[in-house]
Length: 233
Image (cartoon, rainbow, N blue to C red; front, side, top):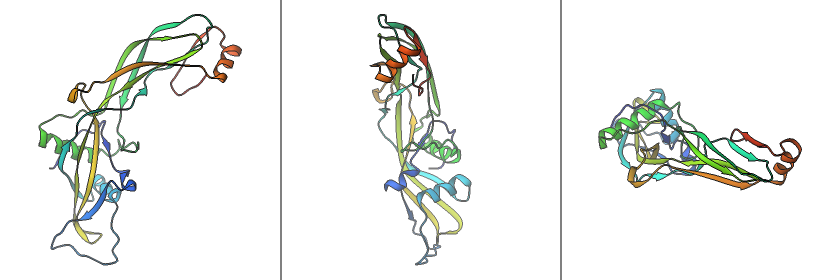
C-alpha cells in the first residue's frame, strides 16, 4: 500500500535494527545484479533513502495491533511541602504532548516522508484516520502532606501498526533494484477509548529525601515550593 500522511505522534522502529527486530532483504527480480562481495544495506540505510527520495518506498501489508496504555510519566510541576503540620491542596494545571520516537526512544519527527507513507497505507487499508502528534491539558486536585513531594502522572492510549517497507531504486543499489525492510513497527497516540483503553491521570506523592528535608529546614521552612518537573529542591 502506498501513502502520504501528516507526521505527528508516530513512533517508528528505525533503530530496532541493532536489536535484530528489523532486517533488510533483497527482492527477487531478473534485473538484480548480484555481486558476491557486495555489502548489504542496513534497514537504516534503506529508510534513509526512503526519507531522502533516493528510493521510492511503500509500506505494505499494515496490521493494526490492539491499543495499550503507555507508561505513566510526569506531566505537572513538582510540589514540595516544607510545612511540618499542614497539607497543601491545590488545583494543578498539567499538559502532556505525545511526540514521535522510535521503539527505543529516539525522536524521529524529522522523518516526515516516512510517516506520510505509513499513514496513507493505514488509511487505505483500514479507512481509519490516525491521530498525529497529540497534546492534552487539564487540571487535577493534588494534596501533598507535610514533608512530602507530590506531582501528577498521565498515561496515553497508544496503538502499533506493523508492516514491511519496500524500497525501489531506478538503478541498482547494493546490487539490487528492490529491497525490503521486514518487521517494521510504527506507534501512534490513539483516541481515548480505543479497544476499551482509556487515558489515565493519577496523583503521586512520596516522602522527602534527607537532602530535601535539609533544604526545607535551611531555605524553605514552612513554605510550599513548586518547581518544574526535572528540577529538584
